[in-house]
Length: 297
Figure: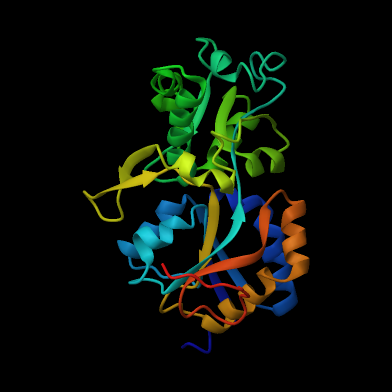
């Protein structure tokens, strides 16, 4: 039976990567003849497919590399690789209310207005969701405005919460929302306007790891009824080939393809802030991934 399905690659992709990664997957399939089966969604949804439903993909591409160490290593994977950065922004369109007025100095006051519709992602499902909470806590400290985080969260009503970054982008593009908290890559790949936030709060500056770590949130854990505490840290995307991947040969070919200079350049042009080389954490990573200094989890 394995031989019949040897030319298949099952890949779980973080929603924020779906648009830029699709041309890469299409080209990989056309070049190799391997059929790519892609499932897109929130990163923590992908984790629970493995931990609760016992569905194992060949490759995981997640929006938070730390998810691997929190939930998947060592039981479900022996290694993971950090491969891209991102940063939080406030995205909008030219049709958004007060679009001509909002900027990096007044964004928090514009979003506090009663006439705007604001969306955010579910922190129990998507890293962008809990990163939104962390960013707002950092903003409250940075601007020295007690109660800012709570008041802005109150403006993003329950009806405007969605499961992942891509679902929010659809609502913003359709004009159903005026503003969303999302990744810069999502804003750029969809042609949105966006407010660039200070580096002290956008979770995009690797040199500010200690500053980001002063805030934390608690979300649902990997198992029903469990919770997990998540501290602020620079945004890093992660990938891995899980233990017991059903098509390891296809996974190896894809990892080699993904880490090639041509594909890295292609993804950068698609607004994914790729690292020059993936940073491997753990042991057992395939030789198709190149790293100068592997780290232990």
